[in-house]
Length: 455
Ligand SMILES: [Fe+2]
Ligand SMILES: [Fe+2]
Image (tube, rainbow, N blue to C red; front, side):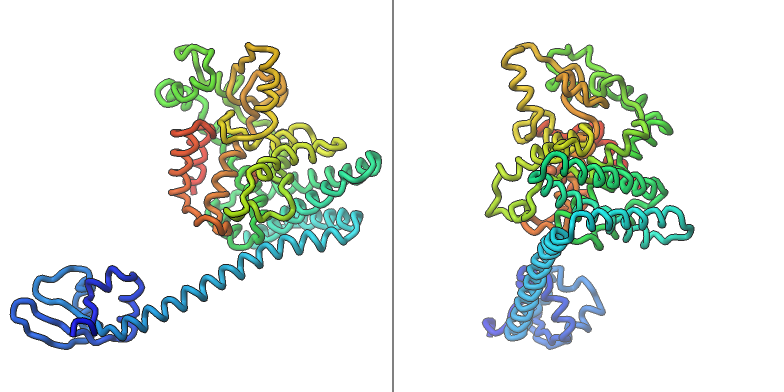
């Protein structure tokens, strides 16, 4: 008899979705009293209504049994549902890639001039949002998403093409493109300066943006920019620098000491971390930062499969994108050195072995001749300090590194690993990128955690 039935205790171990199904089918349970050996049959819903936890606790008196047939049919249904879900997900993934490649392919065919013309249209679109009153948050989000992903795509395609043009032609095309993109970014940041509820805004971004790479560009751009605004706000309104200075010795000094080993521990201060001290970022630099944020992964290849799948993962190809992006943005002097540097140095990770980019390579080359090369700060606001090798990193790239990693591990569109929720992502980043390895900046990270929690 026991082979034709399954105890509820076993059901609990099988699959947590089975019990709700039993309720739906109002299954009749066989109940057996362990003491009196009495048997009775009773509906599962009656037992459940009487005590919702009856099936979770091992009663010493009663054991409950479900017909094996019913369990088999439920398991079969669940399997089918899983299959369908998997199919839907696969279709979805394929669809996402299709959108990215389709948009790229369509735009490649559109003449260069027309593409730039459409970009002016995008600028008008965003300016209309700024100038008209009563535009809803939904409309703003839509326009921001559309305009930023379009700007990214047009830049990507045009810069890919520029490599084949003469310097003169390239100069003409890219000059227009770059100035227009800068104007668009300027207008987009005006919209982003407004008081937007962070969580609502980010959620709708995740929902609406499509295409893994495009979504990553847009989200990273917006999130990084808002993070920098928060940084400025905390400095000017909440005395962030004094707070950090007060806790520096206890909370951070040891952490930074191995990055600047030639400075005696007792002499290390917050001013050694942020060269010239922590201060707000001037407005003129905010636009430069934003352009760098939007274009940071421009060096990624068009077909992005190897960013998304474990099997074809080719670390050389992945690592090349920072340097390629740096070159593309500087080529024919399309964008400023600062913008190119943000793209070029966003995976340096304070020189950690898993990081990559030009800076460490140049450092090691310089070190060959000049054995005593020593950086006297961890982060500088000034790119020239990086070129003089007197600092370890450029401030906007350190902001971007944090947001970039955060976006990669929380993005539900990534198919190869399940994404983490905000809490687990921050926990993971603290453990892997700060405690175990010195990769992202711990002071900026502390601020980032507060930035995400502020809503
Ligand atoms: Fe990247
Ligand atoms: Fe990225």
